[in-house]
Amino acid sequence: QVQPVESGGGLVQAGGSLRLSCTASGATILAMAWFRQAPGKEREFVAAISWTGSTLYVDSLKDRVAISKGNANHIAYLQINDLRPEDTAVYFCAVGFGLGTLAANYNYWGLGTQVTVSS
Image (tube, rainbow, N blue to C red; front, side, top):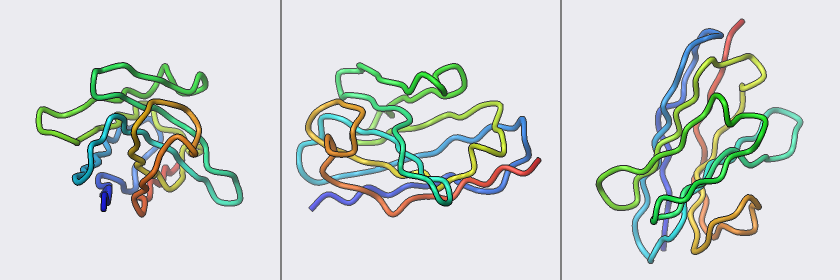
């Protein structure tokens, strides 16, 4: 069973940066993604990376976020810059067998890490 584990969330002032980490192990993983869910809103796609290095980004955030993978297997990072109060959300890591922007593309989900941005 694959269980992604997120870390790196916290409270940050507007304009600051955070780097979120996700580690996962288990079955063959070909893609890792980040989604976020703000209070009262639906879960939305942020970014994804395949193990060959292909990336996908949501248009609204692609100027402020960067997804990358670590040297070790099955580690992915999400760098978020110029944080804004509207970025406040729980950020979820998801892993799966194919790259995509839909939640349905991913088979395993972490419990999430809270990011809170103060104005």
